[in-house]
Length: 325
Ligand code: UT7
Image (cartoon, rainbow, N blue to C red; front, side, top):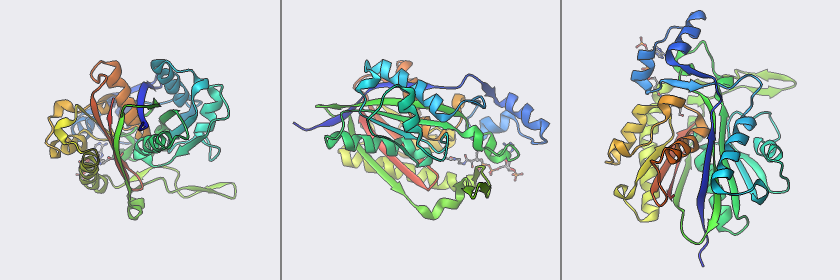
């Protein structure tokens, strides 16, 4: 019998501190940085984001999201045999957030590692977990996206600091004899490293270079739309499906205009696109599992629906996972 993988539970967590655009603009004004709710909504669709308290790390957010996903799946933490965390804002240089989450969940022994593909991280992590389940090496995986991007924002740069937020999303992915994940498609092109990066690094006890996010927004915007359309089409072709078969598009939540352009390019109605960027901002690797969990819990996404998850981000990296929920 063919072995597949299927999502059996979703969970998420947002830190309680929520800042509307107006609240953020007022804080930035105190630093002499000028922005407005009107500009942010018009250019990005973002209305609010959550920021974690200073003593809260990615592993804290990830652990709550994981517990929520385990509960939804009806699975005990002790039954998990793989943990993958997608993050670009780990608690420490090493070890991985996944190992820290494993300990916080009170389990030991199963493989646990991080995937670093920035905003495409969850798509990469889900693809790896799917492959490990299909190969027979594991049966029940926790796949998590967790970020505290507020830690790496330059609050003197209005072109980036209004865009991002903190949060975590998780899924339980289990072996199944019916197909859940139908196809996936992953890409990277390292010549674009410089257009979206945190260039700093640790050396000899010091941080060398800037430890804050820097981005050429327009360059990212132009590349993102074409890459997202291409990877979605590639995943559909691999599964022998068309865009008409998709019930819900769950794109990386970075900018409403990018999401709308991609969905339109696939000739899909915008009503089939899940939008959480308005409330979460861009939570990088957490954005897709967060949007998935919100849409499952609101009753939009139902068992049996065909979902297209797709992401793009620093690296450049991009990819899509097409699945039957
Ligand atoms: O996860 C993947 C990572 N990132 C993305 O997907 C981001 C992709 N890029 C974008 O979302 C958009 O390019 C941005 C939202 C970053 C910028 O939108 P834009 O429509 O490309 O604006 P722009 O960069 O062309 O800037 C237009 C104007 C500029 O002023 P001037 O030069 O026309 O006078 C900016 O200085 O808007 C100004 N501006 C702002 N004004 C108020 C830039 N940021 C702000 C701001 N508030 N926060």
